[in-house]
Image 1 (cartoon, one colour):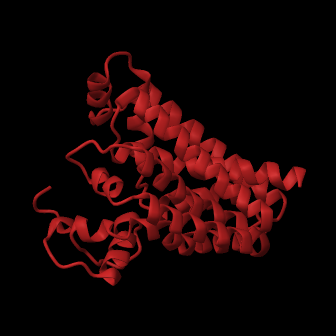
Image 2 (cartoon, rainbow, N blue to C red):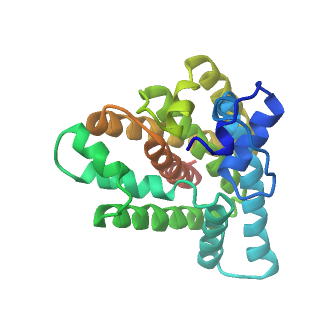
Length: 260
């Protein structure tokens, strides 16, 4: 880890921090590297950065539906695959690792040891499958209502879920996740979430608000599960929160589209 470009010591730069976050969380050819301390200073901006990723995914969905005339299920699978690929499968290992840690019996120390183990158990594989298939079903549901903006909202809200978990957690050190947790405080979380809620409302009215609320609830649930099982949280926990947050956002928007 000492040789990683993210750990180079340098002065804080907002531009490099933002571009560093995008380099860290996507495969976009930005290639701006900075220290982990500098990069995580603007963790609260992360949901806003992923609006761009959501827009790209929504364009992908539009092309699949309107130009290629693929059915809604195929389009939903393509959109999910696009999101996973463009984010470099960044959080999928967190889903599997946290699930393995939660499934095993024992004290928090043992659960943490299993979570940090490089091997993957049946619980991790099954949980990843469930999260993936339910997320695809969620995308299918909102696209069935022709709500393409929902793709942008759920990708943005996924990072709000991550920040919610970070805000409620104590970091497991050492580890990259600890930097994100330490840099998330009540004031910058409040600013970030208010901005996300405003953008979600502009994109989807009350349905968009429900999408963000679903992600916030997801972040709270993941934080409580992590606290009960591990006491502390790491990058795997944040990764789980991101993926489940996207799913909960889609679930809440699907319900809002039907009932409102």
